[in-house]
Length: 304
Image (cartoon, rainbow, N blue to C red; front, side, top):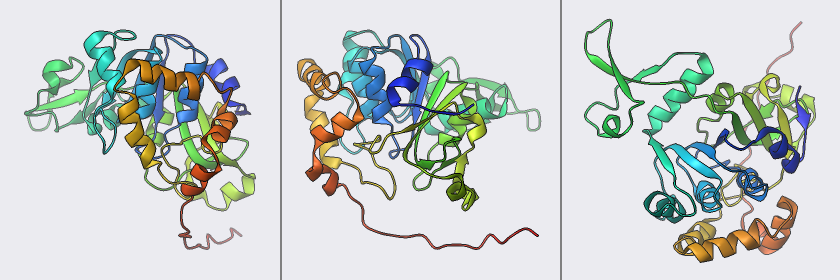
């Protein structure tokens, strides 16, 4: 049964040491608030799962929460490398990090297989690449219809998927629109799901626009109301991407001591997201306000 919880309560209840955790959202909707709370509660030995690990996983790995990363594409989008990840892989600092790499489609395929109960998912995109050589989980089988080899990847079942969205009702029925990634697939593939939203709305709001209900409440374990929970990434219609932060992180994260100083100030040094936002300041929040681009309305009709 879905419950409305604070972020601290949701992480305490559903994220344990040694678990696999997927914080999904493709460029947008990246739940930094959840990642920071996981750091703050000092979880350890996590397997972090994500398409395009972003700054949040760089920060979590710098804080020592992870032992393994399952991913596709690694970097600070539009800027460069993730320096904390590099230190963990190359120097074992603050702890050694195991890598399991796929293409974007390979990760989506793993989520789809997990969500639909398939034993594997076939795809052509690994033919002629080196990924099968460095990832033994990418295998080849014979196409039963054409006789040629086809690559397959296994299903992915994160222990916990954390999905950020615009709004949900108290039952967890979740509206999500804008630039989507594999949030729906990750939610259905996971064993537990935490939905984090900018707004809690009445059930009638969700029912009035059913095609935006990407995640149904029947699979959601907890709903967290956390405005600006995706900063410095963005939420369509609520706030823009904080590009200066991504540039600043490139410089901060190049040095391990600077990275730890940032974590001490912005994660360990604040009790929750509200305090983080107060520290961020009204000027920054005002700068991130998006313009207005309302969507057209439709008439779904009334069943009689």
